[in-house]
Image 1 (spheres, one colour):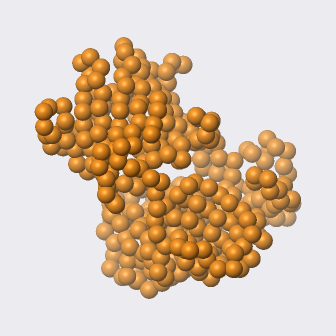
Image 2 (cartoon, rainbow, N blue to C red):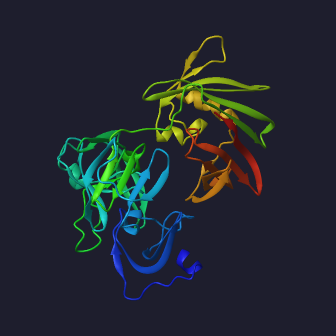
Image 3 (cartoon, helix red, strand yellow):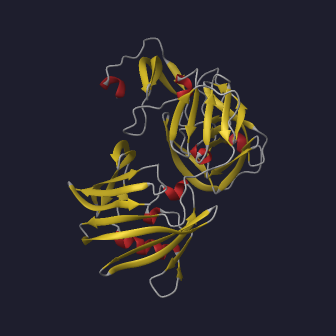
Length: 394
């Protein structure tokens, strides 16, 4: 555990319930200094809990630490800034009253035509969570089955909405992408009144959110933005491995786009391994953090012949799989950071299986570029059996 490794001792008599989407847990506290960039805060109160993702030392609530500052979380440029407050919301941002409930910031959000209800603004939640009580205020949402949702409080089975829901906080509109539906979010303590859900990253990606504590205000950008991914942008990927006697150089290039969709040409030519595909899909976080076969392809064409030939999405994935050693993820992954091309990037290490035997997959992803994935590597028995590595991008 992190606190044991660093010699921190929980304070006696500080048992306190903490609520999470997986259930309420009881925690003790430690006091320790915290440094973020050139800022240091003494005696920050940390709750001691087990975090379900290996490699994560803890969860930072900056608005709970820097209480005299404006904390800006930029989901476009992937930046966290701590600075002085500003008297009015900057251009392009909408200001909301700073509503706190059980130490969590809330917005009044209207979901799918329902009247506004308080929802926690959770910048660390990977997906929006909605309570069954909110669903009961209108027509039930169609389900895409159940899924497991992990949090500090444990793993629970929840419903998954089929498709997207429209939501709004005042003039700021959100798209909730397949949010989870809980029968009831747990209440941590008698003073916790609960909420109607958590507004997560599926709604906040492409936005800027600022907690202006001196002025008791939450500012949210009205428009969604993405880093530029223009026509002509391209990258080269080098494929190597046990099943590939010679390296294969694969090129991806943006050949068309509009406000919502992007089209890539993907091609390689190495002996008998030759292919030229055109793939179209909706631009967004899911597309940018994907790679080759995992991209959310909607339409596909083969350009190997003299003129484009429409093919199915399944056929496109089969052709992309020719340059991949297919593996099966097994179990929970771990996360750490690495330096790649002078940038700090995330690395996900995933226990996997290859040919019925244990293997390990590693994916390096850098959020500074629309070409998010820098490398994918598969190791088995101490040997790297397949590797996809970016050689250059523009």
